[in-house]
Image (cartoon, rainbow, N blue to C red; front, side, top):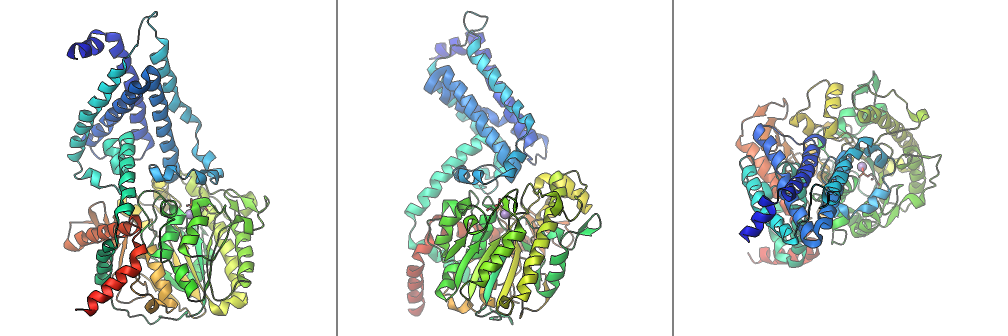
Length: 635
Ligand code: GP9
Ligand code: MN
């Protein structure tokens, strides 16, 4: 064995040279992508070296496996597949600022609907990310025995490469742990995983996570719901809300505003207001200015999930895809049982985000999708049906709905890449260094105009007396990739604190009997459902709902919001990746107990909510309630 290795790798210099060259080529490409395409927060030289080193083990592994299975050809196939995987991640990162997870790959259906934005994320320079594939093919195949180099690897050498990958990975891991302890436990932070173990190793890890996740449902049982119920009971605060039942028996219209962030509210570009109508409307209802989105990879669908269930969406994939077969106890279902007609209105393909399937699980009676609207080319742009027509048609449909109804409208025009036909640009674009941000101001302004037409007509309609409107932003529109431009626009440096604060989205409750109030309470989309249920006077009807949000109007509420990464904000602090900031000033504060508690609570809630979804635990709800009642009565 030893002589074999010696012969292959040491005496046969040309072979070693080819191995080294092909490995180095892929390594270099991966390094360039990780260092310069992704925006990973490398903070010191040690981290920079880890980032440079981490591709090696995965390269040895994939080349080794390729070689073992199919010789030189197999090595080239590994090279090509590896390159394709890197490139898919590059594209995904440009659009989502995140790395792809296995459940996301299953969602190819969504790509078909991405229309304009897929062209925006392709770049001519990307060709350079494939030039090396030709060089690798040349090195592996063209330089034959009869020329000046020969590369005739043996299959067992592939096995050796794969085995060597293991200690190399261990070195990587131990080295990474010098910077971050419990790295592999921090699955909620994909940036960190990629930064420390590299993109390909991250994918191997992601596949094992998927396996674990699938096991969870199989082995779950009803007992697992007990700690969740106990936790929620502990968190429960006494109800003290004067507005309870103020909208009892009324229709509810939810309006999900695409990519709408709070920074644009009451703000201007080139001296012109971005959302003039909303700015004025919010003075007439209950407006929450410290309200955060809490979505992850499922974007709009995650915000819908938060809204309807008051559970956290998942860290990997979109729960609308991964767990559409679960049992839920969602708002539409509860309202349907109480005489409401429930529906969603969204003029996109009904399969997008798997909505047609998930809406059934959530108990919606009807989904008005693209096929229910008169979508023509003249009335469409970018992602599809323009908001003004969507609003108009939807209002017509509402007039004919059975009453009372609960309906959710989802707008579309203000979506990345934020383009518009010339005649619909009501204000000038911005003049920052980001085209995306510059255009965003215009599509936001357009959306505001469409909203105005809808609300003004709504006010004139018969619906007005018996309907409450809830308008909210679904998630950010401007990602971290545009921090520099955002800094130019807001005239400040965007650090972690500002970036977190930029995740605020507007939330407004508006209607005839709704008073005007400006609410400072810190909350998020998870709190919408309890707030709605309170206004409808239906809180008491639910028997211990499994929900992680609290009514935003409850005076006893403890201000709190957690994002899907385990960061949080409460009345005093904002906690980001283990560091706490004063919420008012943005100054760093040394860890105080309250700050630690914030991180702990965020972690506890996220993992409890995950256990409910992964274990499909709501299928045991009736059983658990029974056990709990019996338990309590025997005390
Ligand atoms: C698609 C729309 C936009 O139907 O909801 O999806 P997003 O990319 O924002 O999640
Ligand atoms: Mn969206």
